[in-house]
Image (cartoon, rainbow, N blue to C red; front, side, top):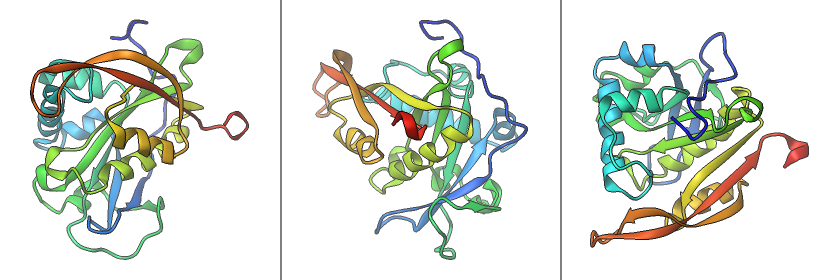
Length: 232
C-alpha cells in the first residue's frame, strides 16, 4: 500500500513477454536468461515462491537497501507480485553465443535443468506503477540478487533487462524513489544506463551500518529515466 492507496496496473498484456538473454562480464556466467513471471506460474513451480520470499526477507533484514524492516511471506506475495515480475536464470553450461538482449525460446524450466532455485536464480525484480491514474505511465522497480550470487555482475544484467522490458509493458518512464546514497554501486549502475539524479532526499533512510555497528541516517537519490526519445 502506497501513500496513494493500492495502485493497480494500467496495462494488461495478452500473455508474458518473450524471454531474453543478457551477457555477463568476464568471470561470471556467460549470460543469464530473463523470464516474465506471473504469480500463478511461480506457484506452479514447487518451492519457487517460498525461495524468492525467503531471499527477499533476508535482504530486507540486512537493513541497507529496502526501507521495510520486515517482510513476511504473505506480505511478499502482495508486495512483489502486485506488478510484473522478471526472473534471471543462470545457465548450467557455457551455452551458444548469443547477442545481447535477443529473444530466446528457452523456458525457465529448460534453463533451470532440475537444479535447486538457490543454484540457478541469479536475481529477480518487479515492475509496477509508481503513481496511480494519470501518472501510472511512470513505473518503479525493485531488485533482488541473492547474497550467494552477489559480486558476479547479475545486478547489471537485471538492470539492462529492466530498461528493455519496462517500455514493452507500456511505461513511458521510470523513477526509483529511494536509491540510498551509500549504495554507490547501484547509483553508478543506473547512471551508466542513462538514468538521471532528479533530486536528493536528506537522511531518507535509517539504515544498518555496513560494519554492523548500529544504524545511521543516509541520504537517498530519486533517480529517473524517460523511455521516450523526445523526453530524454
